[in-house]
Length: 451
Image (cartoon, rainbow, N blue to C red; front, side, top):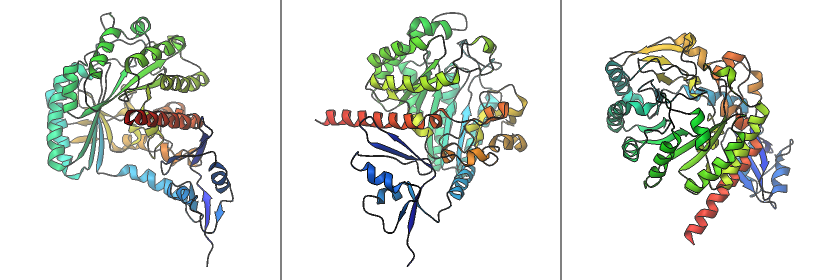
């Protein structure tokens, strides 16, 4: 009888929790597990290069079930290739819809030029027809409302949402929606309407306390924005429904000292409400007219501060954005622009793959017509969806391959020729520790609430 042999998966990563527990993660299965200090020696022994032979003990069985140990005849590269091919499924679709390309803000680091106003009636009809025609073949549909500032076209969002909801109900399609907004017009009344349209995830940027935020995220005609946004968020907090608001904090050399006091403030206002979460990211040179004057951080400083600020927020009772844990799941860090069935629909019907390069010809991949037809240049689409792990041997060999597939940011690869590794991958040990820390805090809070 052939002896079974189990080897550690090459997609494993490990870290250590604050209490000494071992944290394991596998980017193919998406499993994250912790093992006590007492269990650690047995687990670590099983994960040595030579693996385990013979029948597994009860203690090691979970390592197989979670994908940390695999049979020695398993081709993990084939698994990764198959996962990559699953992105080509035709029963799922993600559309980033720009109901307007106008904006009421003029942020200092913005890369957009706001050439279009509200979405034209014929393009709105095209969106409705396109989704209705796809209804029979879809199981999953997600819409991301984007701009400009999408709330400037609230009526367009409502009109399209009602039509989309009719289609998903008729065909029993799983539907999710989210919005990137500056939060200025996000009053409780409009927020309730958005919830009724199934928009339940929001990204809202606040770059520090009032004086600093207002110096870089101001109204188009000049004017402060901080008080209005915070006022809206405080009012929304009183709404007893499920939603997620990611408070994005963009940092650079100018506001590094401003972030922690701001997190103190956010903790006082929104701490221990899991619906409000923080998402800290460095300012980059994204193509705006002020690029050369931006005091961006050195990449080493940026990569350190992301997680330093995130942990500081956790200690203040602020949840870490669920985006982060999602990003380390299988295919979770693949950019929407690299997915075959994801498109950006401009207010004039122009189709794009990426929201960060509107003016570049290689990003103009087609046109949405009023009858719902997409006139697509598939050669341009292929330019975006290939060129990741299929051509990069470094990506093929990486433990994080199933999560990002070499396509975390195809635009970065196009512009620089370099490998676009995620912030999460670069600091995976710290990320795993923070996920453990957040989950532990949530468990402690649930215990207190039950007692």
